Image (cartoon, rainbow, N blue to C red; front, side, top):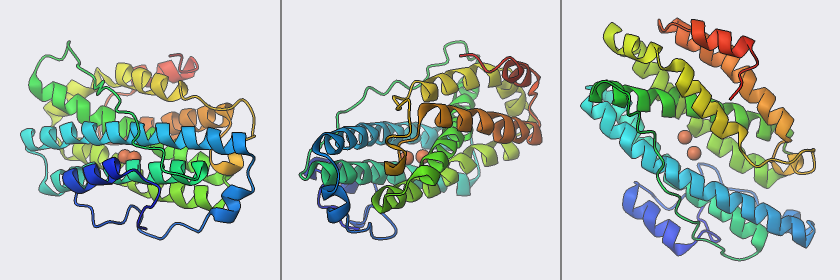
Length: 271
Ligand SMILES: [Fe+2]
Ligand SMILES: [Fe+2]
């Protein structure tokens, strides 16, 4: 899809920093003119704001994946993982352009560029080495954050009935699943000393990550579910299910100690 409602500034950044061929989705987005025209003006404004905000978040994740890529190189990770993390930078830039495209379609005009969010990447000041700090970045961004993203997007996609939202959410979801795999494959291929250094941090990493996801500004009801914005309680349930059903078994599978994580989940995963 060649975007027509994404801002020139964002398209230029994608071209500059990624390997963009001009398409921000692997399949064409549906023609949404009738779908969007049928919405009330205030709803269109609200949806435009939601997608513009999402564009800003995606761009920040692109910066974060730049750090993940550097870290995987520094950690001597598998070449395939290093390549996948480089592609993730490109993916996240394309996601930003895709989200701006949706924002523009709802607004009926280009409303980007999206704001630039501060890169609030975790510093992990108590990490005892650069190796540990880098491993924590990879696990926090990929295994945790991208797995939560997958859970959130799956719920959003299942509830969405609007063709435009379904197409965009599917595009995002397919990439986030690959991004999560970077974290799992990194852990599975790391030596025991790296895994030991990550084990003690699983609980704080999960608490911080889940806290950020639970802070998402979501409706109390199903009013936007058809447009791909789930009710808060549904999203929170999906996140908790991912914690219990994907993250704990996944970390245990690669040999990490999940005792503290499981105890926290049994207490309701307070953040
Ligand atoms: Fe993304
Ligand atoms: Fe991602």
